[in-house]
Amino acid sequence: MPEVLKAPLVVEFPFTRSLGPVQSAFLTGLCERVVLGVRTTDGRTLVPPVEYDPVTAEEIRDLVEVAPTGTVTTWAWNHEPRRGQPLDTPFAWVLVRLDGADTALLHALDAPGPDAVRTGLRVRVRWAEDRTGAITDIACFEPYDGDPARPGRHTGRFEDMVTGIVAPARLDYTYSPGRAQTAYINALADHRNVGERCPSCHKVYVPPRGACPTCGVATTEQVDVGPHGTVTTFCIVNIKAKNLDIDVPYVYAHIALDGAGLALHGRIAGIPYDQVRMGLRVEPVWTEGSRYPDHYRPTGEPDADYDTYRELL
Image (cartoon, rainbow, N blue to C red; front, side, top):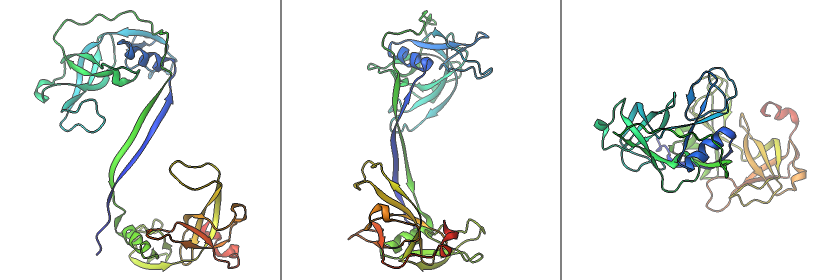
């Protein structure tokens, strides 16, 4: 059996969000070395603050300052910090109930080892040198054996408020397409489209999935399909995507390859975008050295009859 493919994959994007009045005040306060909570109607102080009471769902706006010292309520040791985490040496993830708060804040604790961490440990905030109005303005917590700090009386009003944040989101993982799609990808390198037939319903899946999602049985019989196919549905793309060197407008379509039991998607070129239509007969165009078709173009054949592809819409 050919070796199953695998490769590292990274999904990354900047997540931009605006802030309401409560979160805006909280993050602006961190920039000013002030920790703010919000007081509920029954007198509880929530840190980090939220805009609605999680018990009553009432809107809450009464901001109050809490102390930068507190107590560890629970913890877990992180032996191997990952990229982007608060510290680059082993540390503890801790929930800290700050003095004056009734809920706990999650952050990192800089400690020499797990033996130095315990529930009930007293800690204080270590502020970052450069603060921008983000949770990272708290660099971490550190053990503290002094007297509890007294919270100030800040009301959460600042001249220059933080109104939005940009948080980078990133996921690193190793992707494997599995046996069936490995065979499909290897066949594409030879300019072939290979599907797998279900032994029960006889539908040919392209790309193959290794099992029939309808019948729930494994698929192993390989079937060559195409190369010609039929446009079943399509859309006209008018917004240019970043890092994609294709002029707009262009057409992206579902294409039912001859012999396949479902449609795959591909770009249509070699024809004006406003002349693409359902039933259009197309064929793949391969660029030199490519492992997959660059696009599909019209074959010049008469359009397919609707009844031949209506089940593949």
